[in-house]
Picture (cartoon, rainbow, N blue to C red):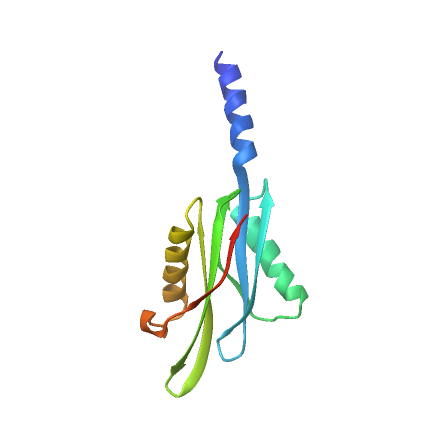
Length: 135
């Protein structure tokens, strides 16, 4: 009986295993220039990160990072964009967030991601939601 339960557990969790990740290209001024999201069933977050980064590098971007990823096989992601002035220079940046079920929580994660990766951005500068998508 334990053997059957073990097999059923493995089968149930294998179907739920996946990975998703964002990658963004950074220009020479440190601004976020473009981004992509890669999701694949039966692949972990690290594999999704590698594929997302590869995709942008194949497009010719030299400086690429992966600021957000997940091991979920499905969920909701939100991408935000902001442009603001800092010390007389225009800066722009994207934020990326993921949540299993809630668009609102994904947006909260997106704002937290933007705060973490852009040390000059302040919530007073505002942002626009650029994309919300189920994956």
